[in-house]
Length: 207
Image (cartoon, rainbow, N blue to C red; front, side, top):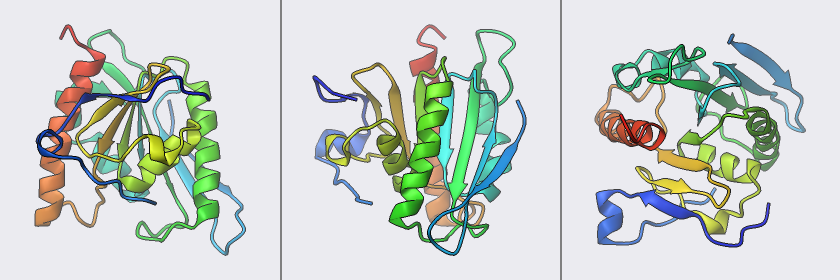
């Protein structure tokens, strides 16, 4: 993918208004295991139709069901089934990790395998308009899947950026089933709720 112009940020956080954010480097349930060079397989899990216009990418598969049942998701009119009417937003959820442990450290080859899977997923989602990433690792994997150099697009939680080809990328913080109840988890959840509203507005600007 070649970019004639840089990605355009269309929604920013209050922090970005006051200064530059720093870059932090790096319809059924489908489960499959892809062999890797290490001792653990990459486990991928997806929920929702390939016809969806919203793709959510994260790391913690144990959090997937919790995420889909959140009030902030349902209140935004987001469904992980084929949307029966235009008012609802049809979404697909994809999680990938190196083992059944959500806090497993990802290796470079793991990112490559996940990016390959995401690239295939994006190509097969012909109605895709926006990708919501949950965490830095998910952000990196999505950029690699889209063929975007990491230096071209910083990870900035709360921002929505439009790529030159029109695809929107929304940066959210990582949430898991283990941190959702602590103070940091609650702060991230509040920030995600605000971002979900902006995601809804980006996909349904007329309500």
